[in-house]
Length: 398
Image (cartoon, rainbow, N blue to C red; front, side):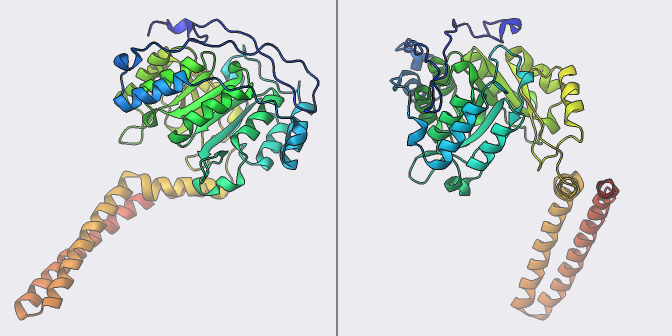
């Protein structure tokens, strides 16, 4: 990468300060709009690392016309959105995001997709809001973590207007790649300063050209590239390589959100020369019992991006995680499932012989049944081995 590691906290493009456009409840002045940016050269497709389709998509993203800034007043919003915008303005100055602050200062509200979630974030101790982007059935970009709950989320434009008025940092996690072009158009017209924007995409779901296209349109925004785990559920050099290549192609401010439970020292060391290393958790995969102590521990280990550890799950959520580790994710469990599958196959073969009939078939079926019993007995032993870890779960109930 042409930019040395020490300089990766700032893009190579000169930053132009912008101010937040006012809502109906605010009389703040608006600074001059972001200057137009040069379009990529015509040979971008020749230099592309991805497919021809990816190059076309990247070029389309980079060269899209800049829409006018959205200045819809709060009074014209739906009642629940108007309430959120008024609250956002009222809370200004309490948790504003400082674009020059280190990313480790970010306190991220992990889900702000619905009016209730966003209201809780506005009144909580957060200076960053995260929304999950999907497309509704009619193609409208909406905020929803789950595919089947898009009707409950805010529309993207609504969410961005509230976020703009709040002066917090805004992270958009793109759950569906098809929503990316509509996101960039919405961001362009939102008037949110680029220094407060984080565009999060999963590396394997976008091409290098699309990542370049994002950078061409938003030179000062932070691009978060989520790497994919390797075949064994952990990060390794092979699984990280495509993400690192995309980061190097993008340049500027880049971050790598990695899962807390599998973010080992080798992963941190591999990613740091190419961007900031961020960490996130989910209650399904486990959360630390002491988030603040773990935050400092991660910083000491070299994590220099957003640290989003969430709150410790309830005892039953932690118990679920432990049980899942033992009975589904462990090597013993996988072995038991393989053996059980073999046993079922053998038993089915025996049943088929019985249906066919005949003395010889009956004798053969008895042998097959005996084999099936041996296989199932072996599976039981494997499960017993996995169950030996159950006392670990007992501590969760104390």
